[in-house]
Length: 140
Image 1 (cartoon, helix red, strand yellow):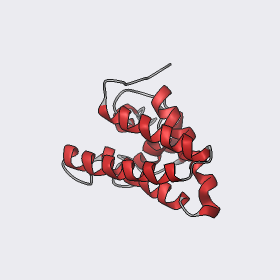
Image 2 (cartoon, one colour; image 1 turned 135 degrees about the vertical axis):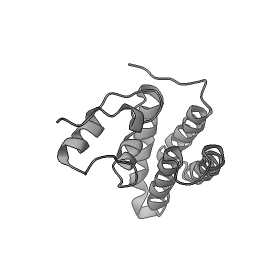
Image 3 (cartoon, helix red, strand yellow; image 1 turned 180 degrees about the horizontal axis):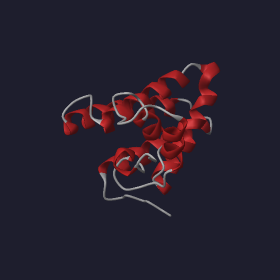
Image 4 (cartoon, one colour; image 1 turned 90 degrees about the horizontal axis):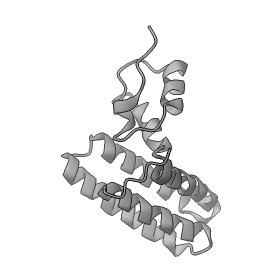
């Protein structure tokens, strides 16, 4: 199922970021710096819009930025393939691996960490909104 959210400003931020990362992995390394800069702008914008750094969308963008910074040194630039592929998956299908991972952090989950929660989190179908709204309930 396609989830192209062209009416959402966040989607456009991710689209430009994905394009920049694609240029970067294609050999134009300076595009990685542009992607990092745009992610920083997006982080600040969402922190203001969402009312602070603890909002879930801000957390996702923060950890995404950390992944991009981790990949910046030349020997680690192969890591840029991960957010490049992941960002395209999020743009086209609405599946955001980073959001799912961040949803498992202690401040974001409503139940103890377990293999069941991890499986439900990563295997849940993409939804509009964020993964915290669409996780299936724990089995009783």
